[in-house]
Each structure stands twice: as structure tokens, then as C-alpha cells.
Length: 169
Image 1 (cartoon, one colour):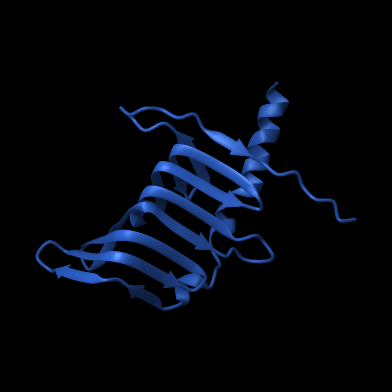
Image 2 (cartoon, rainbow, N blue to C red):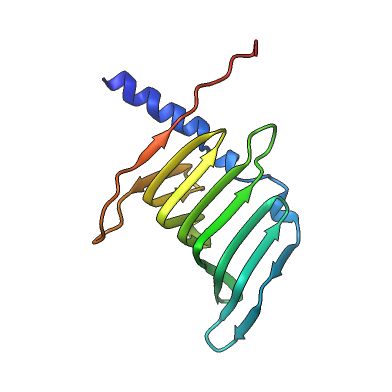
């Protein structure tokens, strides 16, 4: 039983590793934002985009109904995206498959390098699917957690892993 758990964790790490979430050159690319509306509130250190928001940077693309960017000390602290659903995709380095995800809300905490997806959250890569009410991805420590939101109706974590294809195919 313990070996099965270890094997399961190793498979998950292979499918959803930190390096598989980002093309290394994305952070060096310009950020492009499209939206129906834009508000910059300098007093609150808050920038809000709404109405079919699309943000791209390199291979990364986020689509949402509304995105709020919270700043302090001249730096971005947190990015909150809401949608029906919020969608993202990003091409990892190498020959890895595109990573896609969606949820009702994304909270990205820059100081912690942590993305929290809530409300029917789903990640896809290599034909595999990881879904839960809440998915938390800590890219600093390469940790993914899934589970029910506190105080809400809980939905069990569901993971569908596709078998590896042999090199002969």
C-alpha cells in the first residue's frame, strides 16, 4: 500500500512539476492586456480590467471576466481573476504538452509564488486531468494541493492520469 502511494505521488510530480508550468522565457516577454474597461485607482493601489479580459505574456494566456491587480511599495502583491470560468494556458519548456486550467476564481500571490484556483478548478496536461473545488499550486516548493473549500459543499479530488506511451509507438 505504501509503495502505491509513493508511486502515485511520483506520477503526479511528473505530470505537474514546477518546471512544467512555465516556459522559462515567458517572464522576459512583454505583457499585453485587452479588456472592455480599465480602472487605475492610485490611492488604493489597485488596477482593474473588466469585460472579456485577455492577458498574454509569451506563451501564457489568461481569459477572465475581471482581473484585479493589487500593488504596494511599487510592486504587484496579488492578482485576482474572476470568470465563468477563468481560463489559462501556458507552454512549458522542452517538448512538454501545453498546460491548461480553469476555475471560477484565480488568486495569484506573487510573494509566495502561489496560485490558488477555486470553484470547479481543473488542470489538464498530457491528456491527464486534475480537478477539485480548490487547487493550490506553490511553484517555489513544487507542491500542488487539492481539496474542498472551507465551509462549502465539498467535492472530492478527482485525478485521471493517462498511461505513458512507449517509445515504440
